[in-house]
Image (cartoon, rainbow, N blue to C red):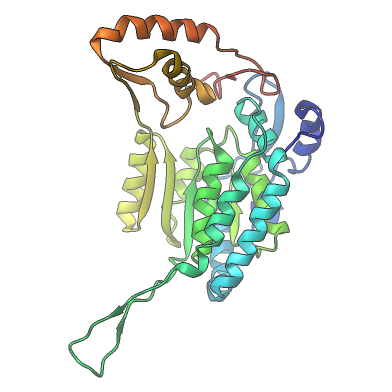
Length: 340
């Protein structure tokens, strides 16, 4: 798909698609209860992109209440209808795939590499909405029918990191709502704009108000309040092991299920007879992609001792060819997410 105009010239108009200083609760753009905001900064230039609410426990409570109110009707909608609405959301995301990618580049700093495939994730899970079946079980009594029935949890919570916010939000939201749940998302304070934009597109697709809610704020405030709310029945967290352990502790206290995706130290293995001319460029891309801010970045090399010196020299030479710059330039790597 060709870009209709240079991405940097389109960025201001795309930013205007997300209102300033508000979050998305019950289908309504609303400020934080206490009126405070957080500045979202372009990490490459220091440019102020948007302000978002500094939500806290009160904002989380409002969003959870909206999700709980929307849950009965969404749960009782047929799985086919839910799937059709999510598929429409995916189609709209695909229509705006370049806009989604540009927003993510602006707030994360990664180089623009073309349209985002977020919509395809929604379409995939839309197809699973009517595939959630139970089992018919054998019974010792011929007059008794034993079956299992899969039911949604209710309100789910999702805490999304800043390295791939739209993709990771969709990976939590689409399967949760396909199964009949409603959800409250706490996006990263460093990069919340794309997540808010996805919520707007979901509303345009006809997904009912309250099914998807986005509360912005810091992890220690809005994020920590989410798993502790008594109406949240399932949590998902992607981020650091340190914060993940805190989320796990909160979920354990309430005995609610939790899905964790945490950081790793992923090895790349180089055998003695490897073609280094082919391998080294891939090795470098695997740990410079998104400035190395990836949970599966190949930042650990396991090599045969006999080729160690060759590998070190080849990687050093390849690293010198890595181009660093702004997201709209023809470069390999952008900035880190923030100075901290």
